[in-house]
View: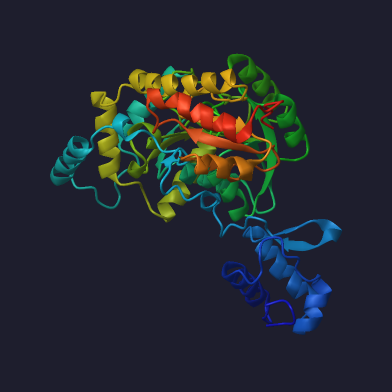
Amino acid sequence: MLGEYPIAGRRAAEIAASVERAVGAGELPPGQLLPPLRELAERLGVNPHTVAAAYRVLRERGVIETAGRRGSRVRSRPSSTPREWIGVDAAGARDLSSGNPDPALLPALGAPLAAAAARAAERPTLYGAPDVVPEVAELARAALDADGVPPGPVAVTSGSLDAIERVLAAHLRPGDAVAVEDPGWGSLLDLIPALGLRAVPVGVDDDGPLPERVEHALAQGARALVVTDRAQNPTGAAVSATRAHELRGVLAGHPDVLLIEDDHGHGIVDVPLRPLAGGTDHWALVRSTAKAYGPDLRLAVLTGDAVTLDRVRGRQRLGPGWVSHLLQDAVAWLWRTGAVDPAAVAASYDTRRAALVRALRERGIAAHGRGGMNVWVPVPDETGAVARLLAAGWAVAPGARFRVASPPGVRLTVSPLAADEIGAVADAVAAAVGATPSGRLG
């Protein structure tokens, strides 16, 4: 211990480790101001450059943030505190907060896994085998071609977040800025500081990221842009044809920006894909199987420009090597046999989501959701709205999971809802939050 600061060490690595341990133990709470470089150096009896190096390591790990003369502080939500922990105890309430798909719409996995096991018995996967099962690459590429995604090689990763992390790491370095949707996917907002990168919030509306906000972020030096093409989490936004044209125009003026598109809604939405790729030197588009086939499959397909995919696959070979061929073969079986009817799945979610949005608007509540399984409701008092809804028997996700600088809101997942429950949910929301004058997303 050192005065009021539980920081110790003589070398930069020791000082950084001391701070990180104190943050993890709660001895340095979020927002805690750290001592100035020279003050801490004097207390520890080390060179100020040593403390500066320690603070740099902590910034790169997403533990602290520095705001010029205002000093360095523990991040308000450090990388050791995932946004998923920001929630409510749903015990005794209907849980509309999880973001999970409807289990009734997921395929049974016994047959595809048995088929994959039978193939493995005949032709075991050994070291030196291709990282992508040829049938997976063929089927994935055909589906991408049908949606107008530019040509490119295919990789397989352990889910969307794994793919996005690998693409960011292939091109960016600690300290670089990434333009992200706000509100946006909480796991991505956690990942960026964990990689030592800086998130630059970009407002969204029902048609996707706002072009003027994207232009501003890129003009200010953001080196990458992440866009959810449809079924955006948490708002349900979907990039429209007009918005796609506008965004391509913005990107054309910044060809050196890395574009990452997340199409996690593939297979559960009937909104057409409007890919943005083609105007930048480096790009990637990722499709996860989680929502349509089940989160436990842990598989996503990734395409992009040749350089990006070569870097991703090369680095992957040095780590896990490949995603299990058992999983890849199971997914290929599901695709090949049409085990899931995308139109029927999309219709099920659309019916419930549209009914909830309509019921909320009839009660004077602004609500958003063009596709997927989530509805976003702007609220004047996020904490109060969550608490009142919980008391009424409904657990919803607080918007703090998904926000950087956008106004408060709550997210409701419709997958657990039956048609005859829509009115009761809308009544509870209306009672909890009242009408929201602007309904602004960000």
